[in-house]
Image (cartoon, rainbow, N blue to C red; front, side, top):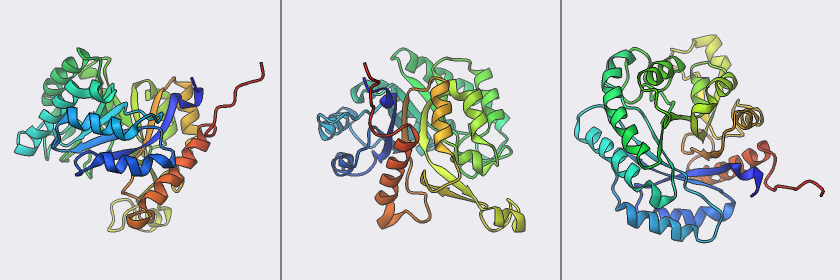
Length: 299
């Protein structure tokens, strides 16, 4: 086994799109080592068929699909919220067809209320989902994006703050519940990402490759709650995060899995430059983990 590949560098693919397998065939030659197919709010595909199409597109390439994504609000009761909850169940039940052992997404949230008010519903819904997943050897990972929410209010997610992580994992101390972590969202909160890896890294089931740049000129003139955004979302290699240190710390806490690039956010490398930026991030993250090739020691 290539020890470098204990941390693979890959990307995300929109599973809701008409033909995600065609996307894979176009992007895999650039060297992505893992793929996270993900859905937004609804699963609009026949999952056995989709798994077969994606595996066929991968062919003999050494590319994994260890994590599937299901993003929405499974705690509320609107039509799309209920579809999101059903999507989690479907992905848990079909994860093995993709070779996946992790499903990721938002916790959901009781809209417009403080984080604490969501805990009873969180415990009910995620207790049931975690038990369903455990029976199938599947882990559930919560992404740490605030989705424009905060402690007092929000629409999508409570898992965006380390104080909330304490509440969540105290309420549901289950081994197959963890985090889908990315340093980008720590910069939004002016939190240093590195200490989080050391403290919480054993709860990291998946990592997103997304970065951020803090616009200190804006902070100094307008603060963080003014009309101008104080943070720009960036593709790795173009932001503030020292990914060499992040990956080193991930190795030190025993993380094995993938870092899948989350694109479509960079203000520069987007639209016609989207894949250009993602491939630049792919090459950059491979350098940060020690290179693209494993070189064995002399015998």
